[in-house]
Structure formats: structure tokens, C-alpha cells
Amino acid sequence: MSPPPRRDLPWYVAPLPEWLEDVALRWAWGIVAVNLAGTAFGFWYYRVQFAATPLVAWPVVPDSPVATLFIALSLAAYKLDVDADWLHALAFFGCIKLGLWTPFVQLFVNGQGQLWWAMYWFLVLSHLAMALEAFVIHRYARFSVGAVAVAVAWYGFNDAVDYFLSVAGGPHHTLLRAELGPAGVDHSLAAHDLAAAAAVALTLLATFLALATRVKALDLVD
Image (cartoon, rainbow, N blue to C red; front, side):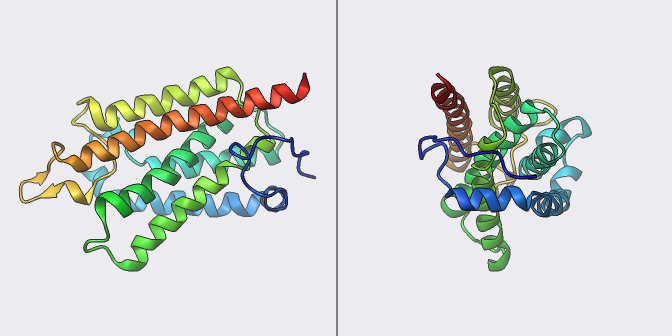
């Protein structure tokens, strides 16, 4: 299966070189396997937070593993020629958002602290790789208005229950080491606000990039 032709899109929605996009799409099944392994690792990584979270809130806790699951399913749908534009939009949003949010939080909010240095840099670099994956999706996704609406709804809801609403014992954002104190987790610290601001800003960025990709692609057709 040859990769679909690359459209002449602006650099800010298609920043990767064409040859790299082609390699990723030709080796998509390998990338699917890597992301599924990352999903499994991520669920294991969240095991302590799962144990302290009501079952009903579990879907909004493991943000990064869910994002890697979305991109794995999106690439699989592409390879199997399944029409799932809503899934492609979710994958794009997830990879942009968590691929950039986690490095920001690790580098500028949490710091390395007592975390093993190899794990620290694994988290930073593996999530940056997720952000790069997002910019392959434009080759096969349409980013229809309905699909983008699904992604905005999911990640907007996620932002709300992660940082702003007390639902089922929330907030339910990824545990921030910078929030931990002698009395436990303190959501009143500046670390919480920084993480929340980054999450909302990245949801907005993903929305802009998805819709800009659609608009620019339609301009090429006119």
C-alpha cells in the first residue's frame, strides 16, 4: 500500500519532510506495535493512581496511554482502509497535547526530583516522539468538522475534570510531583495552574492545527 500523495500544505501543519512521512506510513504496523507497547507500559505506570481513583473516573486518568492507543488505532484504520476520521482527529489531538504537555511538565514544573534519570528522559523524549507522530496523520485524515468536534469535546471534557471540576473525587490530572507535600497532593500550588494552563493551551493549539489543515487542504482543491 503506497502512502497517499502529500499535499502542498503550509509548514506549520506539515513540518516533517516528505520522506519521513513516507517511511512512517510504510512502516505503520511497526509504529502501531510500538504505540501499543507504550499504551501497556502507560497503564502499568498509572497503577498507583488507578488504585486511588474511583473506577468511574479511570477513563480520564491515563491521558498519555489513551493518546498512544488512539494513534495506534488510527494508523491501523489507515492501513486497513477503514473510514474513521473521528479516530484520526482524536489521535492528532492526543499526540499533540500529551506529546508536548508531558515534556513541558517534566522540564518546567516537576523537574527530575527523585525520579531515575533514565525514566525522566524516557518520559520527555518518548512524548516528544508522540508529537512528531501527529504530523503524519494529515496524509490520510480529512479532519472533518464533525471529527474535530468529537476531539474537542473529549479533550475539553478531559481538561475540565482534570483541573477545574471536582467529579468523582477529582481533579484527575496526571499526578504532579510538584504538587506533593507533607499533607499529600495540594492543588492550590502554582504547579497545578501551570499544568492546567498548558493543557488548555495545547487543546486550543490542536484545534487550530486540525482546522487549519482542513482549510488549507480545501484551498488546494478550489
